Length: 305
Image (cartoon, rainbow, N blue to C red; front, top):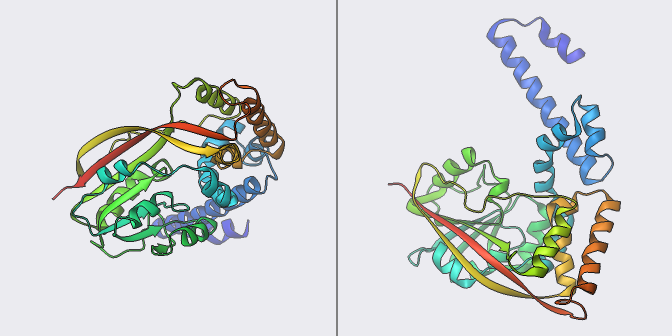
């Protein structure tokens, strides 16, 4: 009430601007509170919706993406153990051979950063979550690791020849990220996006996905449109297999954003169902070492001259 009374006496454009600032600050604080409640599993989406005068579905749609994006820090070690790397051929296609410097944006724990560093490139890795950066520094000590985001990249104009985004573009705001990435690229620089998608044509993988989707479904556009100022958009698919242990597969499941943010009881039930699948499926039971088939989907585009 004090805030409202403070601005009620201000009319005209000045009063409107002041009110807009206050509303933005309050909305930012509300988002912080919701992220805290979800990350500490103190409230359900239904309870949050009621507190905000919304339905459960409305609250989930509005804030779940933000809370999921911020959730990876809670499972950074599981992410590093369970997530696959990427085919070397994908890196060859995404990063031009003439590039001397590259930005890994939303670098996570460094799954792609490792492959970039092995190419004798000057690698800058930008990651907003502190826990992920800790894993990243330990994994790729040669990289220049920085705190930042796709919407606010801590680099000078024209600092890198190429920018790559692995398994993270769907968390960005393209309207803000595209011009920001263009700013830090040299003229004619390349933007590359890559996702590892589990190959659902393999029966046991399809069954694993059915188990996961009983609890939550995360739809990702792995061939997204790339608008101006980029041009000459190209796509590539690579099929490959990732060797992993049973424990690493469980870590892969546990590191999914929608699993991290589940209520504890739901998450325990999901992990139990995945364990049952590993114990019972004819292609899996009794095996400690597994092979996960992937389709790696790549997109690249060149900055317009």
